Image 1 (cartoon, protein in one colour):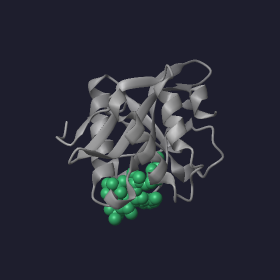
Image 2 (cartoon, rainbow, N blue to C red):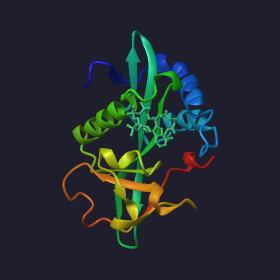
Image 3 (cartoon, rainbow, N blue to C red):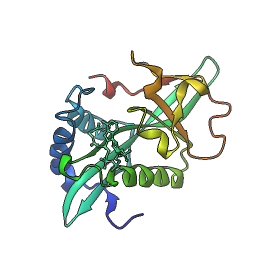
Length: 176
Ligand SMILES: CC(C)(COP(=O)(O)OP(=O)(O)OC[C@H]1O[C@@H](n2cnc3c(N)ncnc32)[C@H](O)[C@@H]1OP(=O)(O)O)[C@@H](O)C(=O)NCCC(=O)NCCS
């Protein structure tokens, strides 16, 4: 893993809380509650400690990413996957590649743990550069009333989603 990126520890929780709040404060497509979402997810069964990562610059946490467990369900099957939510970088450190490094590092950690795919709701111009494609193309639907361009998935292994389709089921903590 990159030298600036490490697993989050409990000592980081307050810094991460403040960072996520600030990162989303002026975001148009945000409910400005993402810092509370992180707290709920950390306490949920969906939490994977190795997939909660911080980016540190001169001892200061300037970026954060969280992947948590979800399922993709159809009438026959329920397949495990991950949700990327959120990724956040302090405003004064944005545009320097930190978000991208966090995304790549989280993908690698997820691969190392044996996960096959990641689902997200996000900016259609940003995530394709990391390999995300439209969920719709895989027959995967997200339970949100948003344009399909914003619903994306990535295969962490070749063809990981070839036989996977259905509805993404998020843990209840996403909705509170
Ligand atoms: C999205 C975010 C994590 C990206 O982190 P970053 O370190 O600034 O990203 P990088 O430096 O790796 O990449 C910068 C690119 O992201 C693009 N980008 C950043 N925010 C964007 C947004 N809201 N919409 C579209 N593109 C965006 C920039 O335009 C830039 O593109 P370019 O390389 O073509 O110029 C960061 O901007 C952030 O924290 N935003 C607020 C929180 C948020 O919206 N999180 C994502 C939703 S979960």
